[in-house]
Length: 327
Image (cartoon, rainbow, N blue to C red; front, side, top):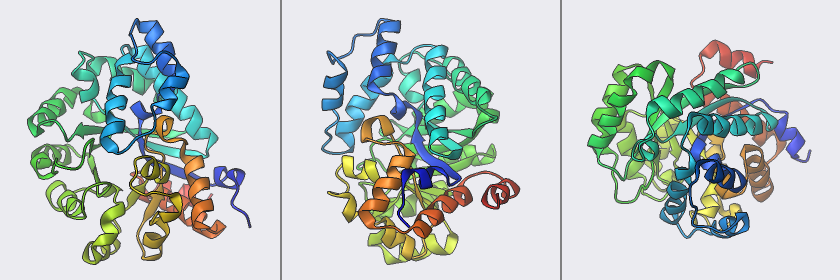
C-alpha cells in the first residue's frame, strides 16, 4: 500500500515538537508588520523565502528571532495560534503540545499578560476539535538565571502550562546550568523536555536525562552514536521528537534519505515525527510524514507505528491515550 497524504491525515496523531513562533508564515509576518508598524529587513514575501537557505541552526535562529518582533499584541498571538491549530487539524493532529519562547517576547517588553491570554483564547476556541497544551521553553544561549527569572514571572500562569523545555543554540551551551529551573518546574508538577543531540553530541542527551530529568528528548538524532545511550533510551522508553525536514534544512543531514529515523525505530526507540518550525523548513507535520516515508521507503505499518508512538509519547493521561488509539 502506498503511503499517501490522505492516508497520513487519516491517522490520529500528536505533534510534540513545534515552536509556535516558527509557524509564522511570511505572508502573516508582513501582515502583522503592517498592523503594528514594524519595519522588516525584507522588501517582500519572496525575499523572505529566499532567505530561508540556512547553513546551520544559528543562521536560522538569526532570522527566527528577528521575525518574532512583529508579534506585539494579544490579538497577534491569538491569530498565530489559530493559524497553526487549523493547519494541524487538517493534518489529522488530535493533540498538539506546543512550544513557546517567552524570553523572545519579554526581552522586547511583551509580557506574559499579552501572549498567554492570546494563546489560551485560541486554544479554548478550538478545544472541541483539537486538544492542545503549552510547553514553555527557556533559551539556552541566555544565562540560566534569566530562565529562573522567567519561570518566576510565569508563576501566575503555571496552571495553564503542560511543561517546560530547553531550546535555541545547542553547541556551546550546556544543559546542566538549567538544573535548578527544571527542578522548580518538577516541583510545580510540570513535565520536562529538552532539545539535545541535534547538532551537539550524545553527551547532551545524557545531561538532559541526568541533570534536567527530561521525559522526552527533542531531536536526539545523534543519540545513535552512543550504543549505551540508545540502550538506555530504549529501556526507559524515552521518546525522541524528530523533525525530518528541519534536520535537512539545517544541514544535520545532507539528504532526507540519510536520516536515521528508521534505524532508531528498528532499534526499539520511541520515535515520533514532527514539524519543528514549519514556516521555515518547508512543511507541516503531514508533509514531514509524507516526505520521510518516501525518502526511507517506509511501509504503511511503519507510518501507523510512528503515529501511534506520538500519542503514546504525549502527556495525555493513559485513559485518553487508550481512547484515541482504540478509536
